[in-house]
Length: 303
Image (cartoon, rainbow, N blue to C red):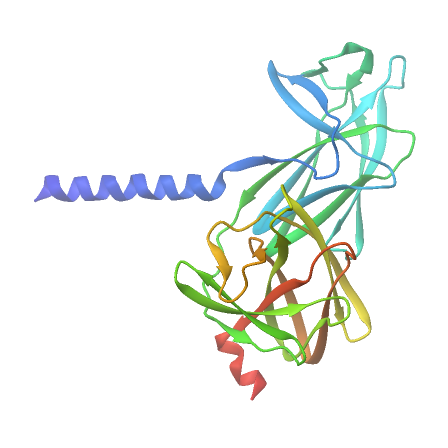
């Protein structure tokens, strides 16, 4: 019996270690709009960084809940002073622009550029951003025009809080569309620039918005689309989302289009009654489909 107990305890211990490793694992993330790279060798290991623009930001798309680490290194040109002061600006989902400053940054003793003509990299400086459930657009850019900064983006997934969600019906005249995924049917609503998605809800609560572009069979590759969210007349966020044709989901009654894989954004609804509007921003795209969900525990707020 003792031996069996020891085996069970040891197995449980290994499971805990494995689960912890899954949730703490970090992965690299590449900006969707930056093609050029900055190669460095740090303590003997090759690393890829991306140059941070001054005006047009580097854009990271990230599915939450997750933690994003932005690792930055300033570039010391030959003959430049011994230390630098610089700042990094970032914006999450079109919200307020935040700025973090670093002072007295010195040349790194452990990092070099693959191409020595670049100069010498500075010591690394980090910013950590946590995002909640859904897809998020994070814009990052440097604060000073005359200081070159390269950045590396690393993220780790966080465990989501378990909740039960139920459907929320938008206002008319949004057309209902039935989709089928592995013999299970789900209800979406079609919306466009001319017929945006509008709904009323009482907070505090959250609304999950699952969106899918309607894709023509002839279209290939990744589809990038933008969505705007308003609370009344106030602009809340502009989201840039990326998806591909779904391989498992199709229309119940439509053979001319293919739905994209669902991409999710989350609206944090403050106290009181709110009227939200969701609208596409790309005139060259087809209509979009959306499914609205809110926590079952908040049904009492709507009564």
